[in-house]
Amino acid sequence: MQDEDIIKEFGLENFSSEEQAEFIKDIGENLKLRVGMKFAEIMSDDQLEQFQAVMDSDDDEAATKWLVANVPNYAQLVADEMQAIKSEIQHTVDEVNKA
Image 1 (cartoon, one colour):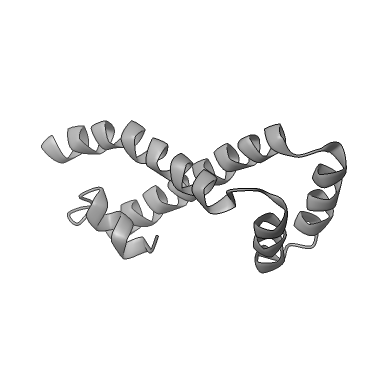
Image 2: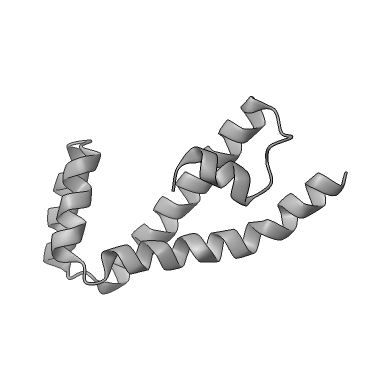
């Protein structure tokens, strides 16, 4: 999902660019944490070690490729977690927009 899509989806058009950037950053960090927890639940110890080695290289593209190759339903897991985040924070954004 692109930043512009997130801004529209959550009704952030009236927020300052700094507030928008912070919101988008928070969503990204939350998504990484939640998806990482899901992956840890389904990966073997060997896979976790392999993935950690890829992550230590700070190569996001290599990490994504590794996940696609080694985690069944990778894209669906990410989409499901993003939807959960959207559902949880939409109420908060609505409240801020009312103020």
